[in-house]
Amino acid sequence: MKQFLLFTIKTIFIILLLAVLLDYGYTSIYLKSNSRNKIEYVYNSKNRNYDVVILGSSRANNHFVSEMFKKKGLKTFNYGISGGHLFEADLMLKLMLERNYKIKTVILETDLNLSNDKRSETVAAKFLPYIHDSEIIKRHFENEADFNELYYLPFYRYINFDALIGFREMYKTLSQQPTSLLDKGGYYALGNKKGNMKNDIRNLKPLRNKYYEAIKRLCKANKINCIAVMTPMCENTKGMNYFDKVKKNYPEIHNYENVVTEDKYFSSCGHMNDAGARLFTARIINDFFKTK
Image (cartoon, rainbow, N blue to C red):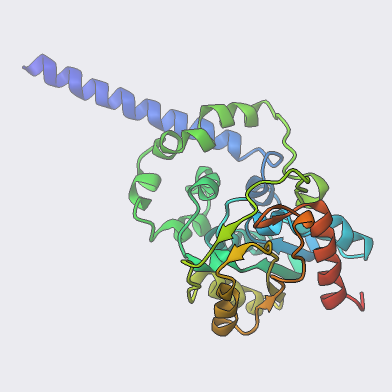
C-alpha cells in the first residue's frame, strides 16, 4: 500500500511538472509571434499610429475595405475577427491602448453582436496563451465560469482549446507558417459564390451590452472618436425590426443595414462580397471622412 501511494504521488508530481514545462514552452512560442492572427499582431506590438481602427466580427472583417481608407490618406487597419463578439473587441482595444497605440477614430460594428455579452469560444481562446503575462487579459476573464481552471491549472487551456491553440497551432507558430489574416490591411474579401441567402433574426434581442458600454468609455477617456455602425444584410432577412430596437437602445449607433440590399452584392445573407463591401465602405468614407 505504501509503495502504491508513493507511486501515485510520484506520477502526479511528474504530470504536474510536465504540464508546467509544456505550458511554459507553448506560451514562450506565442509570446514571440506576431504574424499569424490579429490578436498576437496586437499583443506583440507597441506604439502604432492609426487614423482609423475597425473592430467587430466578420461583419466588420468582410465589410470595411482598408485600402479605400488608405487611398483617402487615412492610415487604417481592419481588426475585425470572424466569429468575434464585443467581449473580444473590448479586450482588443484595451490591449491597443496599453501598448500606446495612437488612434484617432474607432469604427465599431455593433449590430447582431449586441444581442449577447458572452465571449466567443473560438476567438477568446486566442488570448489565453497570454493570460499569465497580461493583467488586462486576466481581469477580462476573471468573471468567466471557467477562469480558475484556465488560470491556475497549468497547460489546461492548451488542452481544452487544442484545436485553436494546441499542438498544431503552436507548431505552425513556431515554424512561422504564414496566414492571410493580416493581408490587405486586415480586410478579408468574400467572393460571389452564394451561401445562405435567407436569414431569420426575429429571436434576437439587443441588450444594454456591457462591452459596448466599456468600449465607449475607453474611447471617451482616450479622446478617440467612436463611430458605431450597423452594417447591411440581404433583402430576405426576417426580423429586420431588430435594427430599430438597437437604435432605440442606442440612438448614437448609425444604421446602415439597408444601404446595400441587392443579392448580387452579397456572398451570404449576412456578409457582403467584395463589390458590396466597396459600395458600403465608400458610403462610410463619404459620410464620416469627406473633409479628409
